Structure formats: structure tokens, C-alpha cells
Amino acid sequence: MKILALYLQRPGHALETVSNWYKANGHDVDVIRLPFGKAKQWKIAAGIKKNYDVVITAEPNAALGLLTARGHFGKVIFWRIDFIPTKFFGAYWLGDTILRYFTEIWSIVPTTREKERFVPYLLAEEEFVTPRTARTNLAISSGPTVIPLPRSIEGVKILSTHWSDERTDQELREYFATAKIGLALYNTTQKYKKYSDPSRAKKYLACGLPVIGTGPAPFFKEIQQEFAGIHTAPDMYHLKAAITFCLENFDAMSDKAYQLAYKYLVSERWIGL
Image 1 (cartoon, one colour):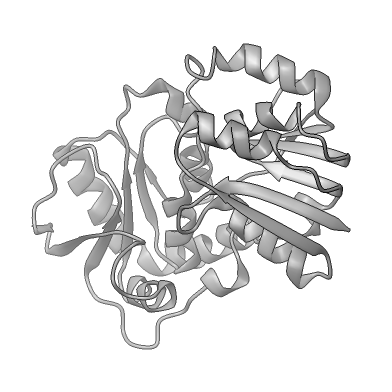
Image 2: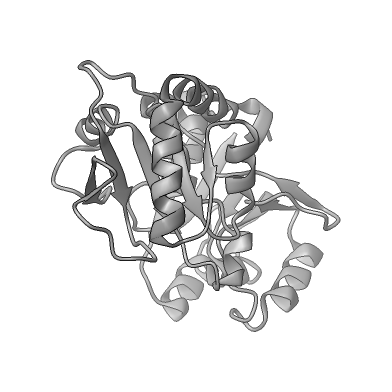
């Protein structure tokens, strides 16, 4: 199949994993990396003249641009990722418009809307890493955090880093795999996060790290149900208790972390066309 993927110029974008999988499985894939800026994204998408069997985008403004593009598209997919319902002209209006003209909508969280398909944040095979050296009492916090973190908690060193670190992605994964806990501390008052699927949580799981998560994202509840981490309140009292629990049960929780991560390995099951 001839496939076009349009997504933001951002390292580790969810759609990059998907487009790479299509390439590896014999599809002819073109990629347009979109700049930041709503008008620019619309203009680029609206200017597409080539024909494709499948076009996929995760950017609402690019999605609107595709509606006026001159190219012929056999199937057009909008992947709804981490959106705020009050933006994008009221996302429900946008969703209704897209549902009318697009072939398929992918939702990153479980959906109840007709014509929508649950396609969560997926992991590539290379993101699964086992430690080459002994794990240490280290907790990783990659990306923003809702509360200030000290250098250590309950004897566990806290390392704040990011996937755009100077290390390569593979070096960073291998370093993460020497830790014992992954922190994904989101603001519980940001209700729109119930529409999100925190990528960092799945990246931690793929390195065998039990995850301590806060916030309304549905995936945190699954992590706790599967004994792969703790869903807790974003304060130091609960964070200390969660860290202690994860350390005491590390071996069992690490095994569960790998098992849960493999559920979300990119595959035909999730993104078959």
C-alpha cells in the first residue's frame, strides 16, 4: 500500500512508531513532518496533490486541511491523540466533522463513539530493554512533573531527565533499565488528561520499571490493576508510600511491567489496515 503519515517534528511521536512499522512490513510510506503552527499545518495538508491508499494524521488542523486536498485518498485516518476538548473549535465539533468525511478515527483512549477505533500509544520492538548491569535504587522522572522532586526519597535517588537528552534513545533506554521505578506525575486537576495515554509510562514499562503515576489518564488504572505500578495522589506522603511499596515488590512488579508493555507492542492487531 501507498501510505502517507503527517505528524509533528517531535522526537518519539506516536505516529512515527506506526509509520516505521508499516515500512518494515512492506508498505510504501511517505512522511511529512509538520511544523508547529495551526495555519502552516492546514496549508501543508491542503496542498497535497499525490494519491495515496491510506493517509494518517494526528494533528487536528492537518486533518481539516486534508478535507480540501486535491489528492485522491483511498482511506483517511485521524488519530486523536492527547487533545483538549475546549480547543480546536470545540473538539466535539471537529470530531463530528471528521467522522462525516474521514474513513476512520483512531482514539488513543478506549472509546464509546461510533466509527472510532481504540489505538493506544504503541511501543516499537527496540524500546524493550533488559538491564546489562545490576539495577540500583534509582527512580526516573522524564518530562514535566506536578510536584518538585528532591534528590532522593526513602533512600531512592531521583533522576530527572528527558527523551531529548544528549544520550541516544538506545543509551537512555539502557540507562533507564538500571533503575527500579519510573515516575509519571501529572496534575490531577487537568481533566483533559483523561483523553491521554502517557507515553513515558509505557516506555518505563518496556524497561521493566514499575510505574508510579498520578492524574486521570485511564492507563494508570490498568497499570495498577496489572500490578505493574501504583496510581496515587500527587503529594509527597503518597509518593513515599508508593516508592516503598514498589521497592518491596520490585521483582514481581518488574515482571508485570514487561508483560503489560508487550501488550502494547506495535502490531497488526492494533494498526492493521
